[in-house]
Image 1 (tube, rainbow, N blue to C red):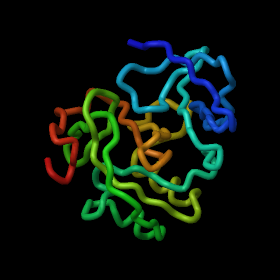
Image 2: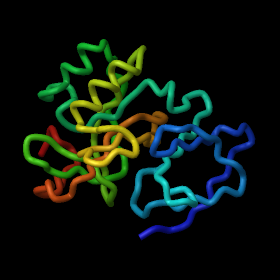
Image 3: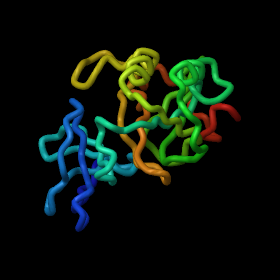
Image 4: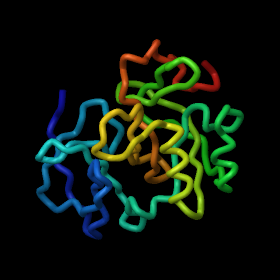
Length: 185
């Protein structure tokens, strides 16, 4: 179910959208996007029904976004944290974002829904190599391509926008992690 929401550019013109193919555009006054009910702030559908993410900072458009929100095996102490460490990523914050954490078995998934998910923000100097490795780990095949287990999206956190991975395959879900924290499940 979707509710309509009007996204208006601020006086500085710093609201941006990123479509499912990674294209960047500015939200113009009067643009109507359909907000997905229960979705993280900034996740929406454009008038043609394409998925877009809203980024609230002109200084961090998608192609230069240098941080990721991780919520499971990429966190400190997680099985795949070495991917971030090998790229020299820097820990910035632990925080919560709106959504649900689901149990896929050996790893979690982030999905839209009521609740909150605990995770960490990590930053890097060069996005390309980090995102390539993260996309491979998360089985994200690219925007507009079918078969991915996750989709890389931009979410708006209390510390600014960050990449994260949205789980796409509900048939793999074993249940909801009630605490919203993979490390305290």
